[in-house]
Length: 302
Image (tube, helix red, strand yellow):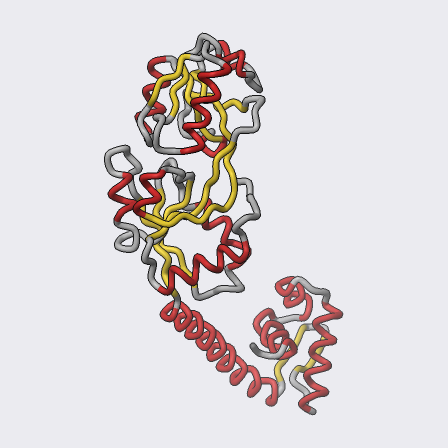
């Protein structure tokens, strides 16, 4: 906020020489001297006495240094007040975060827009996405949590909340490390023949239901086991303990240390996006519209 010449002058005095000031400011001594000459010519007085021993302030220099320090402190205080005012007027977005549906998906997506929309602040709220609790968390959106981010494609979930798709996750297979398939870099459907494959239960997700039908019709050799309508950490633990394969997502590659997530030679994928209340507040509705404007339909890969 202070002029560049005045800031250089204050640094020269604090450093005691042009060369030391230049090192602090990451410029050349010649650049520092040029700024000093410009400042002295502009105000019409000599500020420094230069000698082989260093610099010495003139009476005018002492006066400007004293007032300049006050101006610097005042400017820093003004900036701090401005930032505080922005925070007090900001809009807090409460984003739920769990192991399977981390908030960073949204915060990373939002990062390029922070400067354009500075009033929006994220407050991260942890929650447990257990099979028993997930529907109650979703049904209460707008109370403790405003938004959830993840792959939410259940017909039951859509009865309780609105969903803004942002992109797609790819279906993969999580393989226990003791399984011979764990050494492969890519799987085929034939690799799954004779294997127990745990999947989301048929009946609540249209895309998963279709996937069930495709596998049963074309690859009946795959032994499908249903895990319920929603996964939680116990789903991954059970597959590791039983030696079963698990239909998973590329976004969940690091969920369980004893399971290896491997892509399959298919094009099957599922959407991920933002889940929010069917009756959002005006602030949340405006935020959703910003996201829709910049990202919806762009099929961003995470």
